[in-house]
Image (cartoon, rainbow, N blue to C red; front, side, top):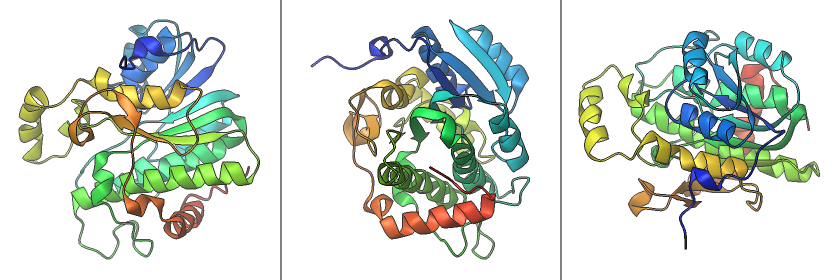
Length: 291
């Protein structure tokens, strides 16, 4: 069977996609390929200068807009100025950063990777006509959700465990969102993807010795950002995919390869935790999600 590539993306003419973090890495690849397929792509990024530079190299129709997922005011301003869209790709993220806080006081990784995208999705939901795709990671498998201390206020901060928690939160949110779509009788779908081990600039901001280690392994082991973006592109554009699908690479340990449907960890399917995280996320962000 032929392997799926970006060349297999169906014609996306007349459809608008929002891709967060589309100025670099996986997001830039995804935005480029969607624009090449005819989509109108909104490049949502914190640094609009870098966004303009990235968009200048993209074919087709693109529009750069400011969005800082670590700032709820920025998220609200972005959402308020947006019309109808077909697909929201929640791609942006930070990984294994030193302990720090968002502008609203959230631990940076859960605040950016989950709470920021939760708020953005909730604010845009009535204008999304097709689906929401959220980027997770194989690191979700080491994640634990601490609803009583989501922002690491009482626990000793551990950067990798915090990253794992945020990536597990992405999956719990995706599956809960898809269940709520179904319960509301909506045609909307929620899907998730992960890139395997892809070489991007995400690994260069941990401010640790690991930056140097991963710069070497990126060259020797990791697949390209183009390959790493394929699961998200597949999840965002393939019509037959059911809601709640999780797409990752088809290679050994899902580290590299072409997109296929994969299974996430047992914890990611815990509906009680998912509902608790949803309610807590509404409280923390002040965004009540309405269908």
